[in-house]
Amino acid sequence: MTSLRIGYGIDVHRLGEGYRLVIGGVEIPSQFGAIGHSDADVLLHAICDALLGAANLRDIGFHFSDTDPQFKGIDSTVLLERVVELITNKGFLIVNIDCTVILEKPKVNPHVPAMQQIIARILNVSKEEVSIKASTHETVDSFGEGRAIKAYASCLLEKK
Image (tube, rainbow, N blue to C red; front, side, top):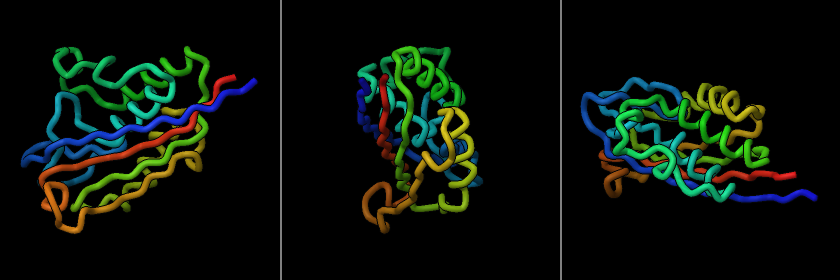
């Protein structure tokens, strides 16, 4: 008997001058970067939450607290690797993920293939199973004004 589970994740970070902008494991040249306890990779954080949610394993903050010094500045690919380990230990396989990054600038689309490569490797799926879309908020609100970045992610898991 197989069981399918859908998960959903969202993450938001403020942007600030002098910080690195890391999205999907790719450092993107930018005057502004995401502010956070780790490397503030909103895309990987949203994917972590989607995977954890689908497996009923709570959320990224439960497993990797932003008050824990061991996670200060950590590369979020490491967090995603640990999440994959958690869901694998629970008997789940990743079928696919679908994500959207909201950022006014710089443009995300040129970096999507590199992000897909990194994420697919960590999730142990093909690039075809990793959908990443980019959008803006058309200069409306904190995202459109370039003061914040947001990512959404959904996933499908299968348990045998």
